[in-house]
Length: 80
Image 1 (cartoon, rainbow, N blue to C red):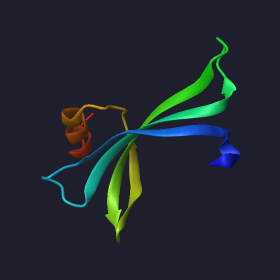
Image 2 (cartoon, rainbow, N blue to C red):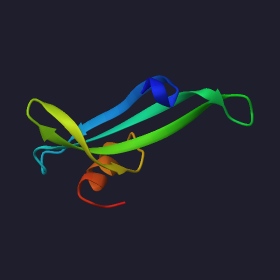
Image 3 (cartoon, one colour):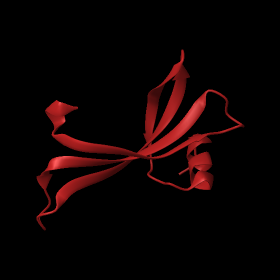
Image 4 (tube, one colour):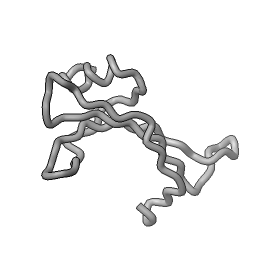
């Protein structure tokens, strides 16, 4: 991640669905070491569908960003 200029990474949510064992949703805010046109640090809001791998998780695919548990459940079910 250092090679991408990331200065901060905050996990905003983590949700495991009872209906889809082995799957989870997480969202994060990434701050980069360069500024937007307004002079503020550039931020990106990301969402991911995760899949259980051994005792950890791996990214299966990207998804929309949310902190809402109901919307995360929709993303896990394949919705938008």
